[in-house]
Image (cartoon, helix red, strand yellow):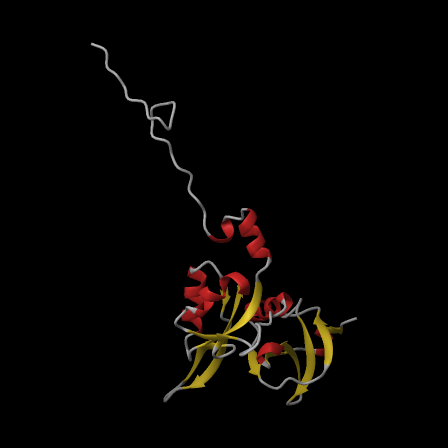
Length: 202
């Protein structure tokens, strides 16, 4: 007795056809997605107090690049000193997105208050500024947040733990410090450097 086999109209082999998995986020750089990534820029995003990490995780889950840099500081407890992690720029994070297409995603986040500056079209932060902050955070050097943006000589660090960074050289408390500025926030981060480790920028 012959046994008939039903052939799926969507396949010639008789086995169910496998639908291709559609990747999400930057992994799926098709034409329109590649254009979207190319038009994204870094922006300063104001968050609710102590919600920097929470907002960054939520925005990352939406497929955006979100970065909440931190510094390690020494604080006095009742009976001892302890090193703790704190936001480098309290109440702010950096997010890379296309304001024309993805502003709604950012603003709909419950931890987000607004995209800086307020009342004007968002102003992107240069990619170089964000990369300098990343490199400084990864260097392991002791960093201090400064809210005093002072004029000084632009230098490049050519040796030591901060090698590869560029910023402004200032003298504070009889120490030379490299200041990496984020003009949009009117803030920056400083690290101590040795004079022999820096060279003037051309």
